[in-house]
Amino acid sequence: MGRYGPWVWAVEFVRGCNFKCWHCSARVFPSDGVHRYMSRETWESMFKIAAECTPNGRLELGQCGEPTLHPELYEMLELGRKTSPTTQQLIHTNGSNVLSGKVSLGKMFDAGLNTVVFDVYSKKDWFVDLAKKSGAEWYLYDDHKIGSPNHRNAWSYANDPDMKLVVIRDCPEKRMRWRKFGRMSTFLNHIDWKVAMPKGLVPVRESYERKCTIPMRFSTVDYEGNYLFCCIDFLCESGGLLGNVKDGPEGFKRYWFGELMQSIRKRLHNKDRSGIPYCSQCNCAFSKCDWTGMWPEGSYDGWWDGEKWNKIIDDSEVFADGWKKKEAKESLLPTKSEEQEVLEKSSDIIVPSTIVAQRDRNRKGFGLK
Image (cartoon, rainbow, N blue to C red; front, side):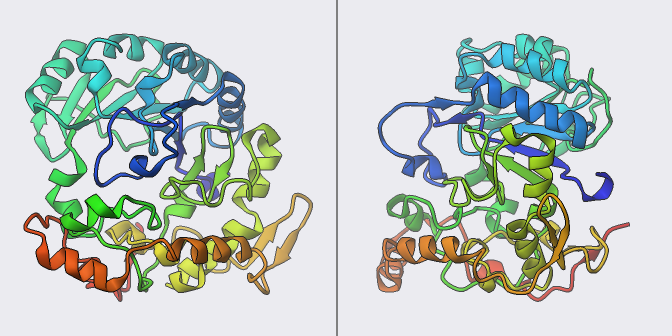
């Protein structure tokens, strides 16, 4: 697929988490207390597609769940490595199960894992000690100068099945860059506002006038194998609209170049988030949103139905489901006056106002070289 294929597969390996962080959608998951896991069949189907369509890409386990909770973690990593040998496997984890000894860092690497990214919610020194003992390359995400002398970049595409890397980074609320530049996401306004608003994280009420390249770079899959339009769609609003990994490589192409994805890309290319039910509620505003030249001009004008290309003329029908869901969700949001009252009373604001994060909203973008 070349330049038109996804760089990354963002995978919900586990639905559910053992943490309930104030800034994460896991707090608003259905409260039955049951974790749900990706099946072996779904996992293998996804890797078969990766082997054919994006063999040298990266597959990231995380989304809104804690991957190390999966009861077949090692077996699944082994199966992934066997099915698509050059696909890099990466895990985002809070590290609690590794620190407690329930999950072994060494066994994950032996099973086929390439990279583990620890979000530090406890003592950073504990994770540094783990990294040093693992024998893998390692570094601090927030200070690249600290780490093993030959560490590689976790986000590169080295086509190296033997790559072993540990990345240690502060948890989101401690990352100043994330807080300042709009990377504390509201996940399409799916968040626990009672705990988030006192920290300064507020609903997105005014759509950003920004491009976004995430739907061109990330192929997202939930634990049941359903494709999602974006890795920010933690509550799976687009689930069921785009197909499933069990549809094989041809089904993947119908999803990736289909009417919904192409309609989203076209509007994002023109900085029109307001015309997309999902993206109109998104506060992602980091620099990669503005990359230009990823796909040639005109690449967003048509969509693939599995047999032929069709011209995008009217996207009202393809967005109809999204607009209904947005309307239903807006009735549950705190009112503007409630928001203002909370912000005025709070003494614990650590996230700049959502409006402040828009200050670069009209930037022209960065050309890729």
